[in-house]
Amino acid sequence: MATITTHPATSSRWDDLQHALSAGGDGRGCQCIWPVLRDRDWNRTTLVQRRQLLHDEVDDGPAPE
Image 1 (cartoon, rainbow, N blue to C red):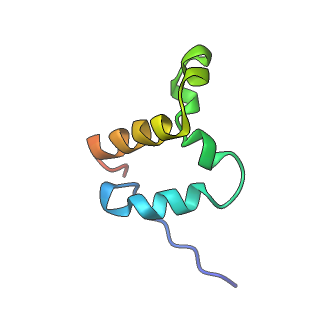
Image 2: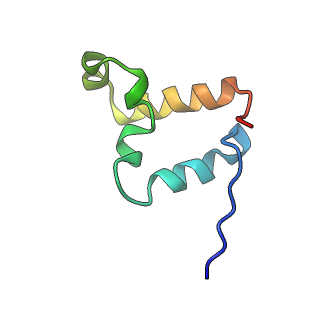
């Protein structure tokens, strides 16, 4: 059986976070930002912008406990 290890989403683990979001489903495209944007704002953002929004949120910390 595989072992799963979890870590807080922090700047130092940004590459790990992106890897987790690219494993399938909508994560890669939504970047976990969809729930915090209004529909019209969501429709106006690009993947690069959504990735930056998530990166900014992770950078602002603190890491979840």
